Length: 490
Ligand code: NAD
View 1: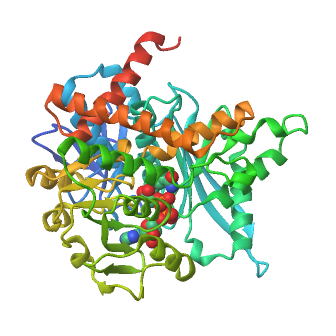
View 2 (view 1 turned 135 degrees about the horizontal axis):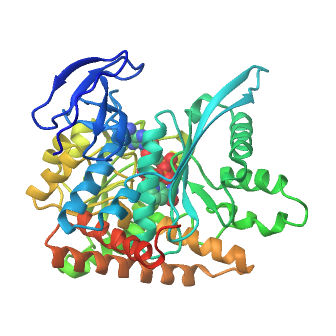
């Protein structure tokens, strides 16, 4: 660690020189942060040679503003994503300059936009679009409507998208966006106006050859159709029909693709099949539990049913249920559609969060939000495989426990890549005015995702690392090659 010149910064009071960092820290107040410090000098993480805000989160890890921890209740996904990047880079010594590029997001857009509510009042909402990297192709990534959406979460999810598209070898980069809201607080008419006004606010920061959104948590094909319609309406008549591929995950009638709705669940199940095949494990009669019963969770559950596997417990935002004799995934999907959640499902008993996590099963499919498998919940899991449908469901502490307990993991950037792969097919079909059959789409998806799985297994074997690190090695190697071939302009 370089010794940093001590220097007084106007208005900031020096508080400590740490043994490890050999930096002079200055404390100053920043609203919303529990403890926030600035220093002048070289940060070992981002190497910014200037005043840099750093935060000491409860975990006791010092991070500069590029790794800034939210010191709220919510665990910082971005910090976890960067920790994982540090871990991978240490494992295989990638080109330092390229890692420097990949450790940051390229563009970050925050928009505050007014929308008229049904009662005539105006509400100002906050939306985000973060574009992490486009070295391999246009930025690509979902839009999330959720009260916990903030800049760090979107940065993290955009970064994961870059790893994912690079890993499965499709010509897209990584992006993510969202609006900080709880959809339950708005009527469908208000949600439509919010979506349209947000799309307008994004303007040319999205585009069919530049940045292509898709559905994510609490967004769906209908919302994608509103985005398309709004975007098209801002084009000249001549250009309107040339921008169908500005968004993917659209309804079939509005230029969507066969198989896109189930794609993420389908990709997960193809990978579980492959995992089971490689281990001589029989899926018929095997049991599984699912957290999150929205698009990803319900499709994965229904497709697992086709293998004769038994769904024994489900948890969503409304509660958790269990039936050791099995829960019919199709029947539960219909129930959730009408009731809004699994709570009260008559053919299963209600259980609590701890009981859900400790339910004995062969496979766990987390398909809700990030940071669900913590050090604590990983200890009580009673399973053989975690197939990560959600993005970032496992915290680094949880990962260590899973490894110690020899629980297999198919990591998120591989496991849930089915969605972006079929989005790529939708994008291609729109560009070429083609319509592919579902069977063709499933076959192409299987080929791409299984070959990515094989590359990850080979990297895990070659570098003697876990599957998550191996998946990232494959992704970053691809990005590294592209940067090396193309060079850095100018
Ligand atoms: P969705 O909105 O359709 O479903 C989310 C589900 O999670 C709901 O059942 C909800 O009740 C549940 N949930 C929310 N908070 C919860 C909590 N605290 N505890 C338990 N359950 C909770 O969203 P989705 O599209 O199915 O996305 C789920 C996950 O999969 C997200 O992490 C998303 O980023 C990821 N993902 C989605 C896609 C896609 O194509 N939709 C693709 C790749 C990854």
